[in-house]
Length: 128
Length: 150
Picture (cartoon, rainbow over the protein chains, first blue to last red):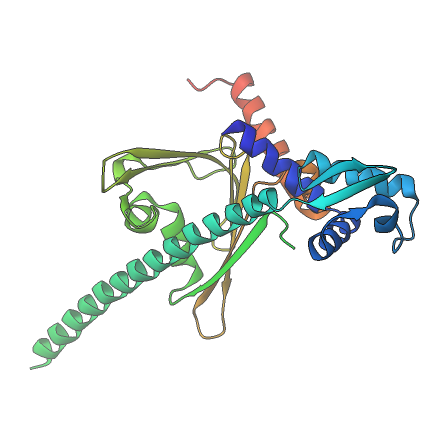
């Protein structure tokens, strides 16, 4: 468990930065791309881009390989799926919990209504 | 893009005080806390309703009797507006905050925010709140150390 949890932390931290999210989205859309091409649309240095790519790689959101003179990056969706799974799993727990809470509140209301009705009818009897 | 923090909103047909009590009293929690297919025995629910107090539940599987214990520590208790707790031993630490808002029609909107968020990820305001809670928790622990319960 611990290993996975640490991975999740790396993923969430990697996704916390808008530049890294943009890099990831580009890679997800266009598949494998060379580093210099990835850096083009961003108004930050190649060095800064390299740092961001390193964070993404550490979180295993991308893979990198050397092809001849070019360093290529590719999107790796497994980790992202894992993060999305985490969110889906916990959302399901809360949805379920609230369904049951709603039922519990309805049961409480029914009990109170019964008590009220009994009181009402008692009052009715007293009035007669 | 996902951010590792989930928000779940639900409206309940009850006043905030009652919904808050349901979330914080074992005799209510036992009815709804565990996911479908589990039960949460009332005698195994611990609620020490103060910052630093324990919030523990044992969920028992209907199918095979296996149990899952949730161990949390309360961070914020503000009836009937806010409730927050922290689970330290699950998924690297998970914080849950629940807010209760009274709607004009008397119903209650319940917003649950849950994050298993490493510190660098938290928004500054969330981190400040969390640190304040932890500071209070530390202060509380310090009083225990200074004045051990008789």
